[in-house]
Length: 436
Image: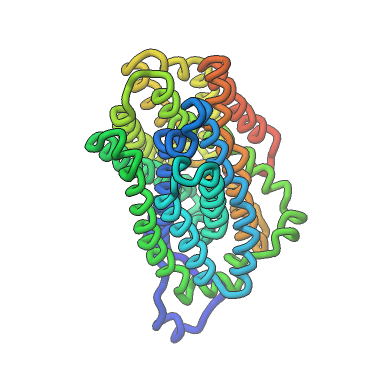
């Protein structure tokens, strides 16, 4: 497969310029997504292991974790704001300056958390600073949308759309694996006092370094002449958000609600289990982080498998089947977290397989439904809203429900996401035609 310019260009011009190969786009997408998800999981793990003790030591561990998850959700609320701000930067100054500013804001906000003073030093200002830095991460994530995933999907061969759709999703388990191993290492070699004093800060420094690598990997693509031509011919041109919402609101709504099963599942097998095990069992975090790492590797294989399966049976069929399987999973699996080490392993392995199959096809399903003018902005808004509705408050809701009403209530929360996906797939015929 090769990516062709939208409009014909003189042969002599093409001969002297760098042409973007599909492999380059795929590498740029995976590196970028891995960087973003690594930041995401470093913060999520710290919300369980660190912030309740460092930022909220004046409340009990459960309340401190709920407060941390409340601040965790701020990034998802701020993400659409980042899209609004940086779309303006994109239109005024171009994709390179926009991406550079957004990723430096992301890296800067993440590194700032590494220097965060605790409650014992500055009191409640510690929580206010943490909230500020978390919102900075959210704004940056909205601004870091580069259109590469949409570009990859739009240039996929007709019979390989499922395969190309899963490539960007590989960044999630990869980011989780690196973050989990880092925290497992520091919690193993350091005493609890040293870890809470300075050890937890190192993963945030690593996140900044990875952001720099991701920046150059993505800039290498977005500054090419071919990418510029796609921008000029509107395939990757940012449109005003108000105009996009007026014209494409049906597609945006469908795209935001269709993947709720996989996005709810995302936190039910990544963030929530660690919080439950850490708060309600006597086990240390290191062992469970290793289990999570192994399960994430299995989830990576399931994401790859989702591409192969989707190209055989259709993306809509796979999304519907996986949502139904998640609904079944929600009825019994959360209780496995109270069944000792064997139950935890079964929950994590089975959960990550289902997550990989569903999450692998949950992104970019509607890119080709948007009009050419609104495709870039519409795809960004759809991603923002899907993460907000499906994942932003998932750890907070699951932990709050399960701590008061038992693990079965967390399963009910997961079931609601699966039902939303099934209803969206059934009602929206346009969505069905697009992703079949």
